[in-house]
Image 1: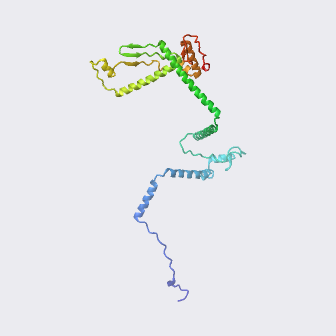
Image 2: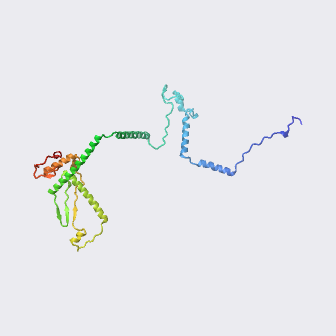
Image 3: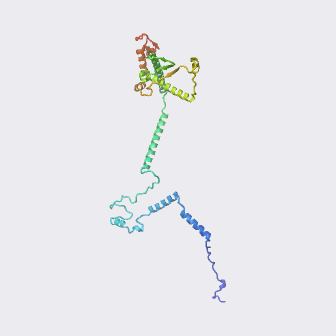
Length: 321
């Protein structure tokens, strides 16, 4: 056999390419089911936002002047005839300082109105300034230390004011007792003893506040008593054969009935004007009234027989030291 003759025994037969097996019917059905599930699945809010942002970025990075559809635009042709060139600014020629890029888009993601963000920033700034001012005030208050002399003077003034207030209350009680001795009447009718209540405005303004305070306490006490009685009251039995001793033993004797002033809840401008006076001025008026009407010296604690009040050192507390 010559060398020119082909030896078919030594021929190299390349391997056949590996063939992909055809999918079975079960595999095709699963793939179709997966594709349909992907198409039917609702995208989440985050996925939709990401897709919108990607499309928006792609659109902003693409100039409308480079789009093939706009190359034959009539509007672009008109602008070109008026001197506009892609990449330049709008307006007259030589207007180099004009904006060359469109206004950036600010995406609003909340439901607040226009200007809400600036209002929030303004309020936050004001809150920060107020907080800083409050901290500064607190710091100054902590730094400020009261001097020992100032502290002693303040305590002395407070104690003196409390002492004068106590003397005012004492003078009012003395005047009220004197007025009751001269004017009040006590009446007894049958089985009950009735204490007649005068209108508060008929009481002298000098001790009217004391009378009002007592009337208010009495009204509150009666309201509490009536409430307690209504909650704990039991049916009582009235016996016609009971004598006075039996009734007194059972608590059915004479009772005391208090009549609260009718004008207790009314406004009293005259009393309000008297209350706003300084305690020394109120005490001065009370002491003067005692001397003029009853010949009584509050500092001597003595009632003189006549208006000359011989033996009284004077009108003020300093005169009696």
